[in-house]
Amino acid sequence: MFEGAETLARLIARAGNHVVIVPGAGIHAGNIAEVARRTSAREFHSGLSAELPYPSRDVARFEACVRKLAAQL
Image (cartoon, rainbow, N blue to C red; front, side, top):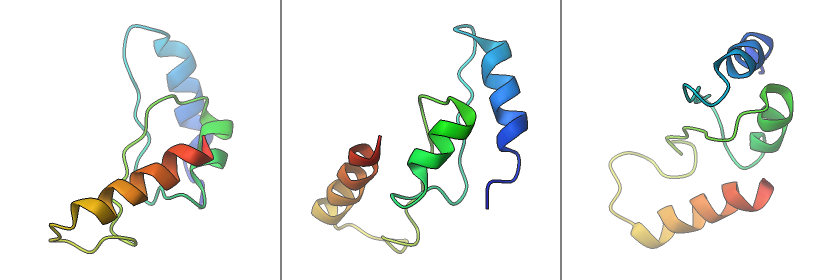
């Protein structure tokens, strides 16, 4: 589930404040805290496809999903 976390952590450390490395693919409220812990990332990409099937125009549900992600950090 956390394939590439070590590589991302090295890239993030090496990039410092020069480049933002953004982990993505499969990130959701149930694992974002562990991804952050393993990689030291401060920004993330989540398509939320498990929570919000595409295409969706349900803005309230999207906002609720993002709030759940943020609450875990």
